[in-house]
Image 1 (cartoon, rainbow, N blue to C red):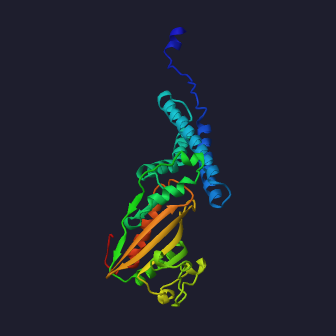
Image 2 (image 1 turned 180 degrees about the horizontal axis):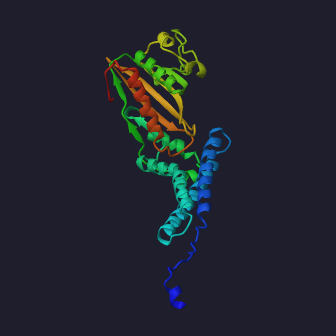
Length: 305
């Protein structure tokens, strides 16, 4: 009898363990993604302050990192130990990478760009003494001071066109209107030579001898025909406000147009108003502006100033 049973093939049932935390890791990753999207949306709508947004982002980064660690550990156990639940672990791994993608991109921007909040062309270098005086009376929050530094700002190449200043001014205004930047003020001539009260948005209001304010809504809808009556000058200074697409944080942009002989020089400076580290946003503002200006003046010869 024993010999008869001994010749039968061995049959059995193996018990395989299942990953316990794979579902939890996937939940962590999903919740981290929801936190990031909700945080950006509510901040853009003005519902929370920058400090609250920073707290939400830190929380989502911690959750996504924890989910990634659990997912990697689970995949390793599935591979080497044959545990069940590999699909959930892989799903948690992918979702964790998606949740961490914005933070990895921000880290890359931080490494590639100086830790500063201003960018300018060569002819618009800020006054270092004035900046020191202005910063002396300004106290930043602790969380903002922790990421602030005194790195050299980004420097972009200005432009030089073989055209008169009024023509360049018209092209600049059209470029600003297309970008949707708010024009706050326009100064005609050299600002140092103007008497008090002579500055103002020239807009497109005609050819009178004094600046006439133009509303922002009207300035953003200007056309080439509207600009035909702009008063001529050899110098212009335009103050505008640019906002990034993601958070809508404002930057003060100053554009200077100076005619010198047969050439006109265009320089610009962009400064963040609410953050001390811009991750290269002000440099991108100026580069996109000059690219649009080159497109608008495609028939002119332009070189770096």
